[in-house]
Structure formats: structure tokens, C-alpha cells
Image (tube, rainbow, N blue to C red; front, side, top):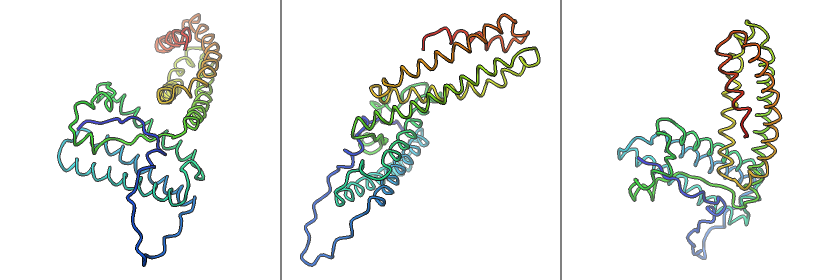
Length: 280
């Protein structure tokens, strides 16, 4: 079973799905009360969560090719489509846009964040041979799967809202990454003899892992919205360069001290010197 990555469809445009016109009979019952904005916000959240659940299921069952799995995925996909149509109708009845709902920015931002991480994990998972599977494998899928089994990739209808979310997320990531670099420098400062040097790698390993995760997350946002990211990247580069100066100073100090005879720390220090000497 192969994955399909459709172009990122504007979410509010997706909500503009047409609904069949229904001719009201003279004795038709009174129309249902209009949904409140609070109820619509809850319905939007439920719809996006259902889309995420489908995407998780799609990737979890990616290697299966049996008919029962196909039916399960197609059924779940159609459930999400039904939710989208119902939400679109309720928004139409309330004469309301999704962007006007209370908490829309947070709802959409959380959905986008989770979906980007999911797609990023899938595309970098070693079991998929490093391929950008949803895109590169599209040509190998059959017509039925192209029609019925694509993943959901909603985004903002207004580019300015997209850029604003990207900039907010990147600013938060920049703050977290800056703190980690400061922690790394402080851990290097603590290596002052053979005993403390032996503990340094153990202390900085989780910092390095977390920093790498944040770098990957940053790359996902930059790739998804390069225009919006451009406004923050210079700030991130400046913060990185400032923190790297302190790390480089400590690395050079440890080199002069021969890393107190610790080979593991020496290898780490050489890597840090290499990274800190590079432009970001």
C-alpha cells in the first residue's frame, strides 16, 4: 500500500464543499437552531482530530495490502469527509468562517504542528529507506487508492495566518534551542578534571538529542512555509552564533587540557569545534 501526499489544501477552502440543495416542503419542520460559535469550534477541533487519527492509521497500516485493510482505511477516510461536509454546512448556516471561531488560531496551530511532526517522522523513518514516501511513491499507486486513500493536509486559507503561526512556532523553537546551547556550554564548563570529564558526555548526550529534535522540527516549518520562516531565520542564526562562541571557547579550553585524558569527551569536543566553526 503506498501513500499519497496531495498538495496542501487550504482548510477553509476545503470547508467550502458544496452541499446538495434541498427543496423545503410546505409542511417541513422548523429548522434546527443555528449552532453557536463555541459549538462550531468544538466541531472544528473534532474534525481535525479525526483527520489526524486517519493519518496515523494510514501510516500504521502502510505495509498492509489486503482488502480488509483497504476497506478499513476507505471507511475511515469517508468518515472524515462526512465530518468536513457537516462542518461546512454548519458554518454556512451560521454565516460564519472557520477563522472567526473562538480559539481558531490555537486549534489550527495544534493540528498543523502534530501533522507536520507525523509527516516528518514518516519521511525520515529508516524503514522507508529515507524516501519522501508520500510524494515519491504516488506514481506507483493504483487509481482507486489515488481517489479514496490520500492523507489529509489542511492548512490556513489566509497566507498571513500561516506566516504568523510559522513565526510564532519558530520563535518558540529558537528560545528552546538557545536555552539548550547555554546548558551545553555550562556542562562543558563543569569538566575541570578527569573525574568530571568522565561525566560530561553522559550529561550532554540528552541535551544534544533534544537539540537535534528541535532542529528537525524547525526544518519542517521552514519547508512548509519558507516565506513565513524567512522573517525569523536571521534572528535564529544570530542566537545560534552568539551561543556557539561560548561553546567554542570551552571546547578549545578542553583541547588544551587534552580533555583530561577522556577519549569520549575528546571526540565530542572535536565535533563541537567542527559545528561551531561552520556557518549555520
